Image (cartoon, rainbow, N blue to C red; front, side, top):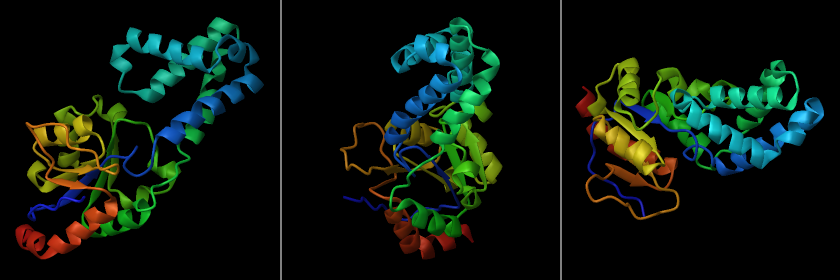
Length: 244
């Protein structure tokens, strides 16, 4: 059930993307197949040498060899494709075209039913910033107009739950962390990371799991973004006084 706490000042919102605005599992299942189908057409030797499980194993191996790129999913995928093509005897210059086939599919998302209407309500209530470890592209997806900016781990140089990425977003928003609410689905990456950086937190708990930690808790625990928009609307008089 939704848990509504007392109103507190919210002058800006940072918002996770994968599994907050849309489920990632269907995307993850599709992108590997789309990429492999592209390779079968354009780089058949690579496709033969690296079926989907082998390509995943190669990517894991390269991740271990390049920990400085662990937060940059796009760079690691390009590196994996180049390595596979070179090893299979295909032209590694084709890696960028292969990546584009993957990336187009990666950004074909199916929003949760509440997400788009709630985004419109939230962005009318407070400035929004997207804050993600993933490599979704809001311009390609078509919802960038709701956001002041998108800050990813790749651009920042460190992923959530690092405090620095939350604080960088607050600085760009021009709002103190205590007046910024971070909203996301992941206990550690979103709630714990944001709380430790001094932000207010909302755990988007769509599956209504039990909160797993005793040492820290979200300020809000809600099942949908609609519930968050409702909370902001209900709290509006208190929040307007706090912002005055």
